[in-house]
Length: 541
Image 1 (cartoon, rainbow, N blue to C red):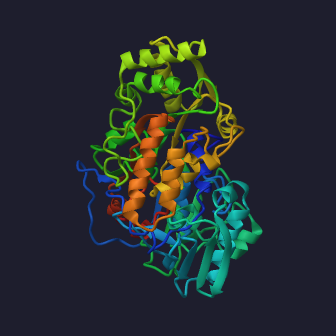
Image 2: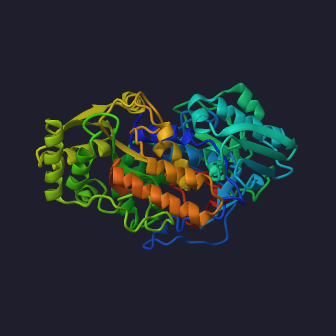
Image 3: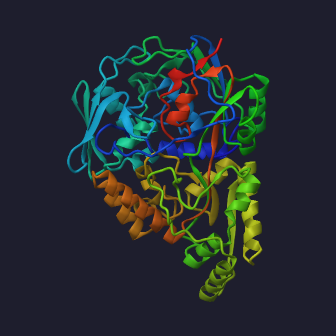
């Protein structure tokens, strides 16, 4: 999500970070692990990635748009940037292959019982944390239990009844209800394993994981995060000697730092930078559309959007292409649902209202007739330039049809407080950057809707959505789960809970001396999951 929160944290980056913290669950092989999602990204054909014999050594300088709010995965609220950094230090229990199928990582396997109420996690032997302590079943239990004790995370993990150590390398996670999507969560922040000593210390400036790199010296917020190669790593050793991560919040400054050679690699969502680096000499870029969606979230629990005709009016009155051209540089993919056409959950006929000004006028008239009120509301937006501009463009489109639309611009903290507390009518938002739709259960299911503040921020309450999500969680059949998620998407669009805009395009751009970018290109880098490809990156000497 977008630009600054405090010296170096973007408002929406922090928001996605909070959302990511809700998903501290577990990934696996077996169970629902045979669900793939198709391509994760597209390589820049104008400047193809050059692969060759890796050169060992060197320190890679990486610039991202947000500094994490901490280094401990139990309590940190990591955005995409946080996950990128954390993946160099921590391993997840499970990860994804290039087809977006679950595969083992720290776990050798993860399998459910017949009804999805018990997950058995078998661990990789002979793995140690950076402090030399053993990675074992007791450590996994401690990580999961610690997450359950964090207020927001605990809410997201409420199906978990208990975590039991069966033997030194076996853990059982026992549920109160079936949960066949649980395995996917441990390929994301919920699967990053921290050393017991780090959990006990609860120090957000200290990172002790099992990953390919380890923290190099103390860290204070505002300083670069430096890591060095973990020579005791259980997997293939990293080519790099180390990585230095720094936050450059301003998108233009970040791109300029890459061109000047001040950094070797950047993560960017700036459409102008992504377009430019597709054809910039000396720059190699890979892109990933399988990220979050941009939309206006409507509060269905409050007027005027507790009325379906008000919601339909907005959807019919929104020219998505015009907004993409103005804000997204014309390169973002149009969205009428949370899944791109390359993902298996994509619905060909999503049922979302089309851009139709005459239908919009009819819906406005029906709303006014039913309520005796004009269609008037406020769009709340963080102060970042891109989302503020999106709000202004929507305001212009909607007021042209006679709606009374005002904009409330808030700094990130105030924005989050209002959204999380349900104190908004419409809000600019980005979300749903998760590989498996089960991770969106907490954002869509009625049990998480609360007018005074719930994880289902917009207060969506739909028996059809609930039924589809619950059925998907209760079946081991991946085809049935896919069909149920498609039903949920259609039901969400029937409610017009979101005014969809576009799927975001992320770029990973690097100097030409950076090798190994085919790994993030194949495995993806723009989802809220672990990035197992850091050992493959290298610097050409």
